[in-house]
Image 1 (spheres, rainbow, N blue to C red):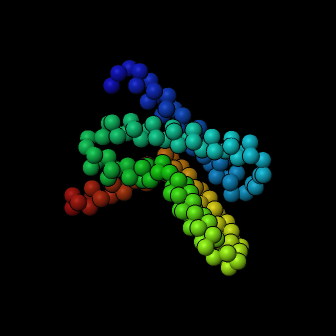
Image 2: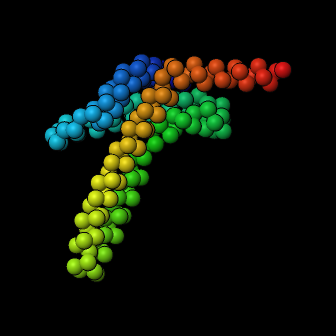
Image 3: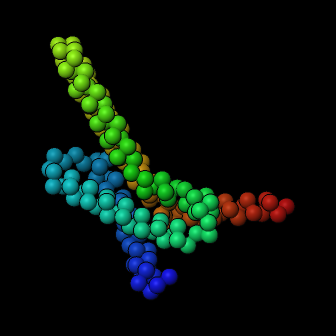
Length: 166
């Protein structure tokens, strides 16, 4: 690997502990603090994107060092899930739901007024479930990048190896 990319990998690996602390702060913020200020929400989204970027760069270097694609997916599947953008998936579902409601509203007239009230309640539920999934994904990122996970994961490997030798 060229020296430039080695430096990038080195600095990125040094950023991971800070990214974990930032991610923990984001999780605590989203769980316990409700702010109506859009600039603060934007700052949280930018910080989350920065953390994901650090983890994606780390994942790219892990993929580059992996012996094969099978080995990479077998060993780092949890890391891949941790950076997967589940929020986009839920936004697409929510958009499709809203489009379906809009077309239904045009065709059903007065009856749709009642449905819109009910749909807004379910849209709020979808938004909350999206928030829960985002928090879950962030927790997954913390777990996969922490040393505790590595110790537990390697400890299980050693146990399997000793069982196989017997």
